[in-house]
Image (cartoon, rainbow, N blue to C red; front, top):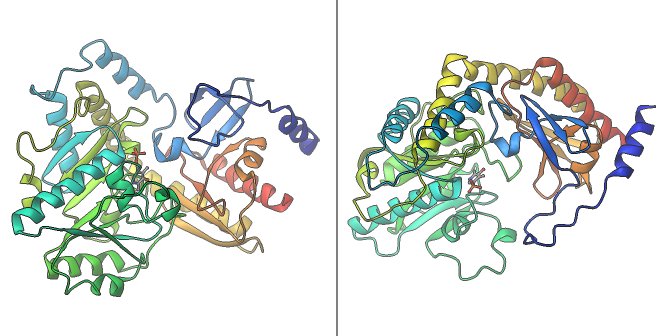
Length: 404
Ligand SMILES: *Cc1c(COP(=O)(O)O)cnc(C)c1O
């Protein structure tokens, strides 16, 4: 009966032409019109369990009452002025962000890629001050840092860079989780920074070995290199701490964060520590929209909700429960080669790419992200996912994999 229902569901999915939109996305055949907590509804009234969270954005779920309230209050108070004036909400956000991250100062922008652009520009300013004319940032293969030309050049994915030549010079790529590969650059005087994701997200939820980040930190200290950690996906509670580096007892020199920071309101932060925090002077960088009273107030509210409801621990616990469920139901399946991740950032590695996997899961009522060329089911749910819902996620994934 259930599979018959799914058959009809699948076959009633209609084509949705978008002739006025640039063809940037191979969109899944569904249009969501409403959300509440961990659930979504499409325009035909079908309910879904959301284990994607808008790609790690809606950590507090859809339409969280406190976020919706803050949006409404701030929209009726003040949306935007300009960074040519003092913005009290941005001051407060900066202070709070520094408190939770251990950084000294922030620059507030509108997205992840812009946060990384600020990080890259800070390293260039620092390098030129040191007399390095052609500074080099070492990044990792399979990394993702964004789509603007600078962050795209940092990204370790030739597929995404294809046909965008000339890329920005000044980036090298080495294997992730390999300190020796970084150490091969110790004689290169042009190196200014190492830029990494603590867990590679788009790359397929790739978790480095215990001790890797610490070893990278030590190497950077020894060499006088800046360590940039891109926590755009891993940050803001996703892995069970505010930032993933906090599991390792280290501190980056530059930290970028975005996705869950605004729970859907666009915002990105580049935070820095020590000399890097003072690299930018008036006129050296800027943004029209970044750090508006509106976006800053919403990010402040997100942080406040996470603190007040002790959601870091909840993310760690729910994530551990969900991982165990996935291991129990899929751990020995011949099509599954690994189950990885930390907190509420989990990946099920499949032996082979599965066509239309995202749609197959949608047909069973589950929204997840498929990454790494269709070979990894990436699970990035809201912290409010219940244990029952976590069980459902594992069951639906098992169901779909059994049907292959
Ligand atoms: C999503 C992401 C980005 C890019 O963020 P945008 O807001 O899409 O520009 C950069 N780095 C990482 C690790 C990401 O996951």
